[in-house]
Image (cartoon, rainbow, N blue to C red; front, top):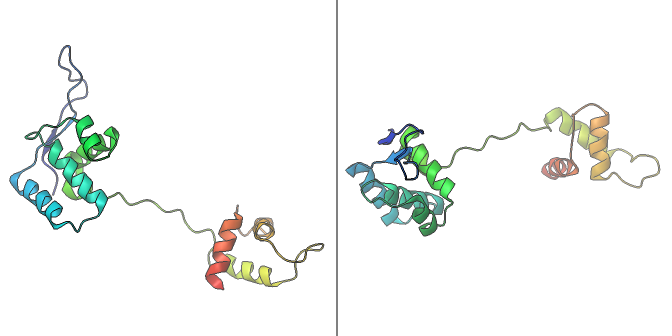
Length: 162
């Protein structure tokens, strides 16, 4: 379900005044009721509740300014603008839920992990009493198993296998 609203060309200005809003939020009675029910239940995440409240106030029928909305709900003005945009372009659910954060692929797969464990269990380099995380990370890079590795990445991999 996409949000109801309108997109106005960005070059649309009223003479002598600030530019008009590009994304206008117009809630249907059903959308307004859904948000009010969400807020009345009190079980939604704080972020979702704040965004629902902000959308209710951003509705053209209510007519709050972005600065007033941002101040009232402890949001940045840019967040309110993005909230309007996501509602108009992608709908209610996209506006209320956070975007998924893309994850980087893991550097330590099963093969690298096996080498790391074998290396950690082996004798340390000459002149050292034990392997340090920094030495292990450097050795993995030296062996060409990974392009780069931080000591923290080594720590997390070893912690997982202990």
